[in-house]
Image (cartoon, rainbow, N blue to C red; front, top):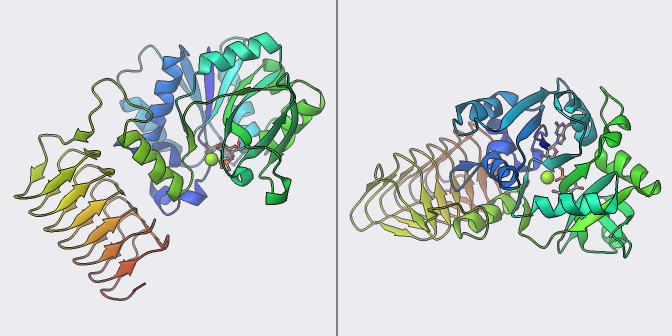
Length: 368
Ligand code: GDD
Ligand code: MG
């Protein structure tokens, strides 16, 4: 059985990180996100995937090409030259299917411990043309709201409901099982939304069913949820494989005197943590990060080559590749630094401030 993974979106809500790294490859505990999706598929006995690509396909293909452990797992690439939407992306992958059986489809930005076998079983039992996995969330407005009948037939599918349209906490988890007839219903070569066009139509025809999952689930598409997902993986709540450790510090790390490294933490190869620095309490450092003397990094994600200079504080924030936080600066409150950006010394960034790639903030120019 094959799966189609939708990884062609622009990742706009995760900018500026996604200007340089496609959402499918943002690191979580130093593993590109797509790696967790591959694990999920292989654990369910699925033997291949078709990546439905659009935005930044090259790094995604390179990541897969570099993985030597995927010999018994087929990977095909369906690349769009213009965005085809979530159903168009599925249709575009159709030519790579090797048999006429049902297909698993996943949104490529969903971190979950869901049992795909159970969803497939439910799909077979109900005889549906399409089965949507559901999860419950506190606020469905950012998702596809799904009302169901007692027999789990879908009664209504409403993408991005407004607050006054909320009738349930159950939402589309971005995990589907589709029969091949569904592909016939998607027009080729034009932008089509599975949520706004295909599911409402299947629902009207009474051929759309749901399967509720109570497993861990999170869409990593915003800085807040990306950071939360990272924290959850660091704490072992989801995605842990054999040999998981709360403190993962490779031998290649240069650790200064009296530096504190606190769990849960994952440090990439070749990092430097200077004297008296504190790193940890839900921190992941990419490869070659440098943390200066007495600096504090807590509850944050640092991508490869990020630098935090002496005495700076980084809390609950995301630092893009090779970005730099100058001496004594404070970056907190879900701030996000684009690749190679520089926060000059003495600045205070807060309140979800996002600095675009390459931008250099002169010393002492922003305060909260
Ligand atoms: N190939 C391709 N082409 N993929 C696309 C395109 C496209 O034009 N547009 C989006 N995608 C991919 C994205 O990369 C992502 O992995 C997935 O499709 C879903 O797109 P998002 O932009 O992340 O959608 P969302 O999070 O607002 O909403 C979707 O996911 C929710 C669950 O996380 C919807 O399916 C909601 O109904 C659902 O609740
Ligand atoms: Mg999403």
